[in-house]
Image (cartoon, rainbow over all chains, first blue to last red):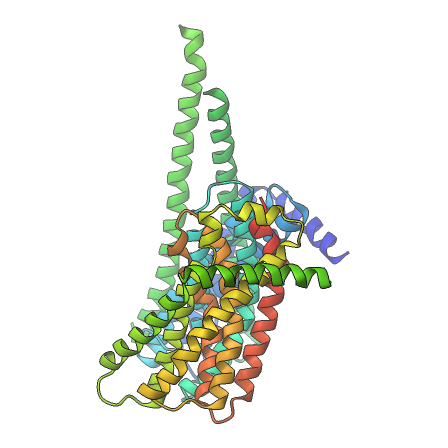
Length: 237
Length: 50
Length: 213
């Protein structure tokens, strides 16, 4: 039942025209930027630098959503043999990797402000993203090393499913490793989540999700067109 | 501009740059698709001309 | 069910017999791990602490395992045996389970030599460490064999396996190093057991998709 409802919702999403999505992401991202820089108050502990948080965290959540979408489509490929799922899964993972790169970059800058170093092993989320980044880069190596076809779709799908198992396991592992490798404690005071801080975060989060979905739609349209063109060429030759 | 302000701005610029590069790459790909469609069109029209 | 385990037994015995006759993998793994220890001695001049040598031991074990895992599906590839195995009237996951058991035997055999050698060259080996090694081996072989079957059908082949495997092996390293150096290793051993169980189920359930077209 739950899965069926989700599919229906995704079907509804698909009917939103691309231009509306593009406009929505433009408006949302601009609003989020205005809120971040002019409206949200300075954080009590971190001051101005806490403003990276709004995009850094929403990018991270968006990347997780992309990886989850990739795994969901992978499952659909393996389970239902939906012919569109393979491409959708690939584009989701692709998107997740791009957003993951932005998470790493913004996280690195945040580490530089907060601790004076470009990389800090004490930041769990950041280390997790590094592992995931390596993992999903290997996904592309795998995918481009197999000829297009069912086998490639199967291998990619299985590997994408491994990803969602790896995320919680790696997170637990990083938590465990901190206890013996780095006994020092970094404590990032959680932002007091209310008022403008919460509102700004929510707008930024929605903006990133809509932006990701827009880019996903563009990418998938391009990829489908590419495949159809290739088929057409073969039919003509 | 304080140091923190510089870094925060840099972070947002990085995000902007990455998205821009990504959109640019998509645009390049669309250009290639466009070219390929034109080639196909020519191929289809040629037998009629000759 | 007994039929399933008979299939697994037969397939694993085939791998072990092949190795006994050809002696391709195990001597290479033994030589490799010994050579790596010597390299470590010179890479860490002086008397490295137990913490450092434990870390290096795990690097050595992982790379030795990779050496063996890279060879795991080579006979199938060279003699085009995979098609035959897939067509055989047994559950496909039995192929993975049997291969995992065979590589586990090789890796354990390599470690039976490597751990005393480690104790001789560097520091003593504790009981928790041995337990950690055993649990980590299960995870390494389960996941590694699975990824090895994936890598063997790609064009990149041997190149791909470490890239696919190392990100997935990071939790194993965390658990294993924790079990080796911490005074209270139970937590880390539990984590390793959890990893093994979780990934074994995932691999077991999805192996069919790796070999079928």
